[in-house]
Length: 401
Ligand code: ACO
Image 1 (cartoon, helix red, strand yellow):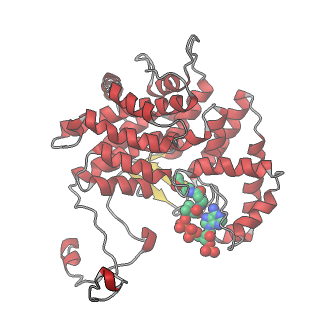
Image 2 (image 1 turned 120 degrees about the vertical axis):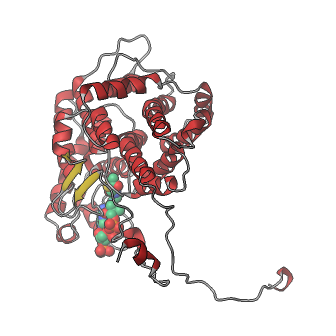
Image 3 (image 1 turned 180 degrees about the vertical axis):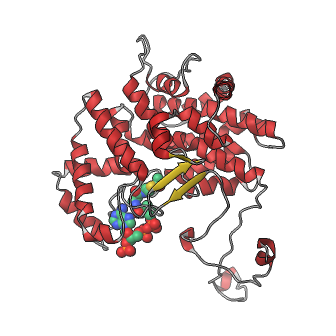
């Protein structure tokens, strides 16, 4: 029996699976994940090898187009991106209208959606050329929005990058360049940033990616789908965990550094406190990304000569969890976001920007998933439900209620 016949033969039978814990929403050739063994591969390449040997733009290309690029493919992709990095001045005005206190994720989501108005051809994708044009435009403009969002929050003037720089170097230039100062790329920070962006670049059908695919399945444009994905990523149970982890670690430090007290709170079912940066829907052994990031955090802090007391608090929590039956039984280990914030902070990135950095890393993954969904002509995403409300009842006029 083929899948189409099977779907048609359900006679009203609906599977209920809150949180889609056991529901596959699509077939995908982008990211392989084995949660038991802690394996993650993009397009068949191991995450360990990519983090060690590739840069973020190469990985973005592989995710979006299926293979690591040749030198000429990479050069063309990069040049096309460079050609589209200007952002309409009206988008700058929209950014300037936000209060300084606005959360950067809300700003980024709004600006990404606003880009549609200035790139109307990105909405109706009818050919592979339309698709390519939309992809290079957003790969080009998104880092500008990220940098501007941070600069606006810090009260710095808004700038553009430099065409001579690589993709990640240019991002650093746009984020950190101070007026009247020569800008020197710190290679340690650049490598760490490449690594962090690569490790966040895709993670199959997580909450934000599923959002991008489901919004895109209605044939809303790429930028609108991405804007929805950014909103989904914002929440502390998903990408917002990196901000929440740092705030939690700071909170524990300010409270005297008693990690045992917070371990007890995390286990107390009457206490809403959760150990942020711990646990994962799919990884039940370890998160391979967390392993790489933990090592990178040590290296970056050592190389930059930064001593951050919250790193010790993070290490204690991890050690205590490893020996605690509550965490062991539930297979709760540090996830990708447990150590990432410590690195971002050492780089001088404000806490509220952490999830924005995650969004930039995830951008190629969202694009690749959206592209795959459109090319496979997937049907509109439309789950069913089991109705549990009232049966038919008569209407009662306002005066008699
Ligand atoms: N601290 C304490 N207990 C936890 C934690 C935690 N961080 N995570 C899960 N648990 C407990 C739950 O209370 C539950 O216990 P119970 O069986 O006694 O009821 C059990 O472990 C299973 O947890 P669920 O919430 O059912 O697992 P789910 O797969 O739905 O959630 C999630 C996964 C959201 C990641 C969860 O572990 C969590 O909230 N972690 C903290 C937030 C976080 O770090 N999110 C980032 C995830 S990675 C990412 O999105 C990039």
